[in-house]
Amino acid sequence: METIKGKQIDQKDISAAIKSGKVSVLPFDTVYGLVANPFDDAAIEKIYKIKGRDFDKPIALIFSSVEMLNKHISISPDQEKFITEKVPGAYTFILPWSAGDRTKFSSHYQKLEKIGIRIPNYEFILNLVEELGQPIAATSANVSNMPNCWKIDDFLLQIADQQEKPDLIVNAGELPKNPPSEVIDITDISSLKILRK
Image (cartoon, rainbow, N blue to C red; front, top):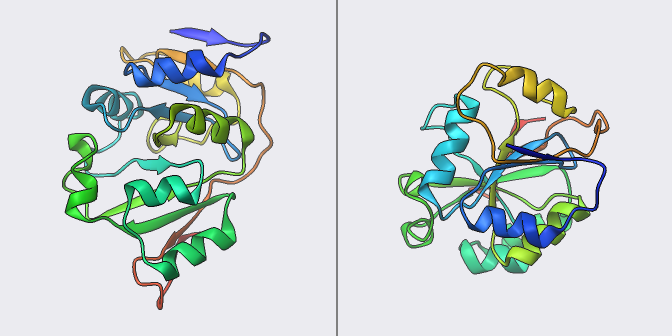
């Protein structure tokens, strides 16, 4: 496990690590997040093990733009308009996911009929995803049912006794105490459901 703090971060190195199947902890506009390549079975499984997360709970996908989203997920013009008006921002949108779309991703995504997506208001992450040229899988960097982490030290305490650990940690210091993203189900755009404020 390598921790980067107080030195210049080379996004190409982080991008290469993610593409090669390594799990990273990165700062987001909300809290620290666990990040992996969504096309890599072993990397996604490692996130679940680090978090102690049930395998039936999906991991969201992060995109750099609506244009990138459209390349990977089939959305309606109304869904696209709704998302475009709110991004980048602290929102997770729940979308229907066609069988044809999800078969391109890790087997952990194959059974899902819906997927959560984000385009965060955080230049570091947007630039990283753009550098990769593909979405990343991301979930909050904390053990399931334990508090969200705005400091790396808090996360390290949570996983101190675990065998499974991330490969790379980018420590940006203490993040602003922003809440997690608001979750909005836009599967039926005529009947929006706010699942988390």
